[in-house]
Amino acid sequence: MEVFTVPKKAIPKARVLILQYVPIDKETLDSYLAIMVEGNTLLKSYHGRLKDQFEHRAMLKGAIFSKVDQAQPVRFGKVVIRKADLAKILAVRAIELRMLQAFAGTIYSQAKVWYAENRSDSIEDVRQEIAAVMLDAIYY
Image 1 (spheres, rainbow, N blue to C red):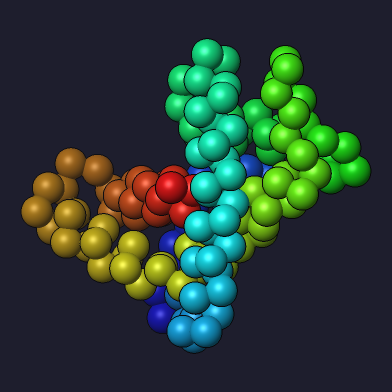
Image 2: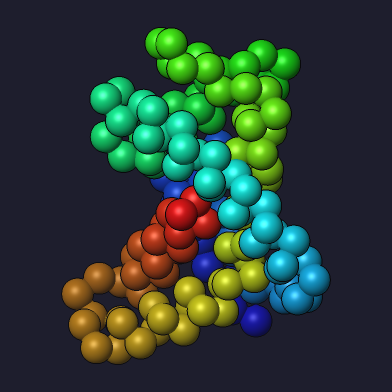
């Protein structure tokens, strides 16, 4: 079984994460996808109201995660992210590692193909970049 590290920038609060493929059953995957649709739809909606403060949705996501206290709504000027909406956005965060694990095989195989064709970076660097892209995809 292949394992590789994911850099700290990809998973906040982690020094280095060993990402190992862990299969996921269809029922669980479907439930995770439903969580992602609901949370990301809310994130997109709030980003639409906060575009003047956050150029990219990822910037808003980072700001929300840095301010999060589930007991309190999150405020950005006049826009308040309600606790119920915040819980749905944070539910996506709660499954991000599990989704990365489920797709670790894809990350590994894509990195191998890219590395075989380019060889400009180390295979580990390529894996890390692809993992970071996969993490971004979880939120879109």
